[in-house]
Image 1: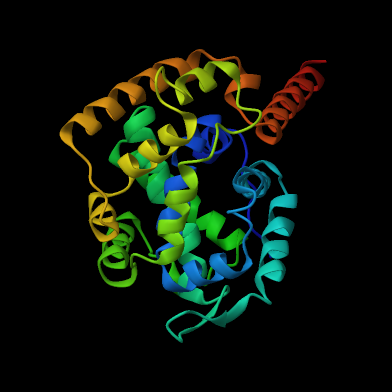
Image 2 (image 1 turned 90 degrees about the vertical axis):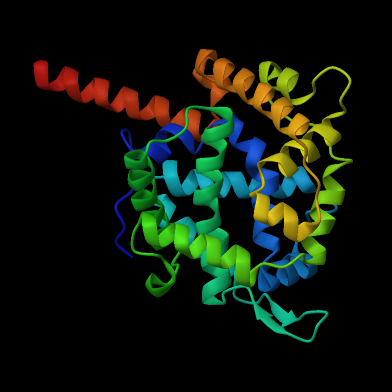
Length: 285
């Protein structure tokens, strides 16, 4: 499949490998598993309960390969499709599911775009409308790498937000898997390998890291999703989350690149700069 690889200058190149993405990783899994087919597949075939950070680490490595792996990104997309082919069954309500169901496969991917927008609204600089449009066009390229059926991908940004709101209203449900994900978070420590400056943000004084993870996850969920899950969220909670968000937004740009980016992203970015430096030197020689 011929999909143009990502590289320097793309929005995903600048953001997809940042450690701060961990702050919306939990909420992404909650939103994804509220789709009945995804929730059933994860319940039966995932290791998130036994090894939550291990599962997340594998997911993040895969995402980084899509963005920073060059031609290897397309191979990773094909590998994931093969990995999910045998995942099927019948859920607790007697509904048949398959991991590669077009709507479900698309939802897992497309819900991440909304999470990127939310991440920057809380923990960075909110995107302008034009930046959102550019990011969504890149998300469609990622969808091609993952073999998301073209018919399942909204054609533009306006169509995307219509799609997202309709999915939340009409297709998502308070699935037992989503509720179990939230419960597991309460006992989950900070991610292993998280750089010390971000670990200090992750575990504020007087708040256990599991509780903090749950708090940030609930707070960054769309209000309509919180309502479906029966989750409470107060104005005081929102103020506290905004305070944490401002701290992360101020800290992240000041971090050295090796502490700001996960390993695959960090090395890819360094290699790209070295290659450009070599090309410039050869041209001027």
